Amino acid sequence: MRHAFILRLLAATLAVLAVPPAAASDVRAQDATPPRVTVASTRDPVDKSYRKMIAGMDRFEREHALAPQAALRFELLPRLPSTQLDGITLRVAGDTLSLPVLVAPDHTFTLERNAQALKEDAALIASSKTSTLTWRAHVRSPGVPTNMRRLGDLRLECKVGVQAGLLSNNAQLFAWLGELFTDADRVCGSPQGNYLFFSERPLFAITLHDGARSEALPFDMLYAGGTQTPATLPFCDCQVLLDRSFYAPLWDRSWSDDTLLELHYQDDPPDAADTAVADDHRSMQQMQAALGPATVIRFDSGYQAWRYRYPSHSSAVDGAPRYADFVILFGPDGLARKARLSER
Image (cartoon, rainbow, N blue to C red; front, side, top):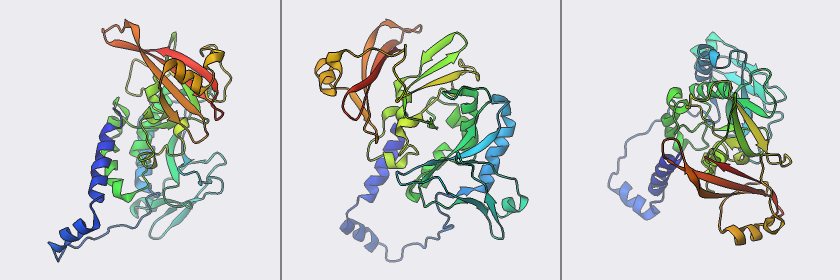
């Protein structure tokens, strides 16, 4: 499972932290002269390394062929419900310099190359408090419809984002986990990669289009894989963006760079690909009475995505079993807004 390894690591660390105070005192008593620990930096975890950001820009230039018509920007996204992006300021700060960075109304920005900032190992500092922001690369090829994303753009966003060290965590205690995700080729070239993308609005479904080929993105690649719990969500960049988060098949070269991901939003009216919901299945209570318990993902908006999975009658070309997913979107009032049946 995509997040299983991370969750095991977190669980192990939390188990260590859960040692009772008395037990901890016993451990300290065994060594009256503990080794000195030197803190090398007091840099705020939300700060970004200027050197790493420039390395991400270099990666963009080296792999520009993934999105040859696109320019690179960086983007600020909210991490907490209280985050206010409007009015946030950025600056590059070193030992002897402080350079303002212009943030556009859409909360994107670019960085200028500065030799002195590189020499001083400067940081990109935001005016917002610790752990209130999520950072991403922003690559958009011209001509792509607003409700679609181009796969080559996403591939390049991932490589730049990992190279630039944009993945953040709000606890220094878990900063060492970042070492698992600093290899851009590994993160962006493996089915086990954990690079999340975010849409403009809450998602219901995504359809991939590459020439005459079309296919629904698996439900397991929406909503941060559907594996987040109240305990793990604070450690995810998707903390307040769960309903906008998705993975893309970056590693699957059977999908060309020109593949378009069509984003179907929760507030869109039902379309031809959606499944009609019968009147006697309209409420949550009716749906559960008819189909039984579902896998449920709840969003801060009050919306819920219910997923039922069934074995398909057919098998894949390689003989592997296929499944059908029936997904229903319920509104805060407990009534179904739309549903979709897809098979993989």
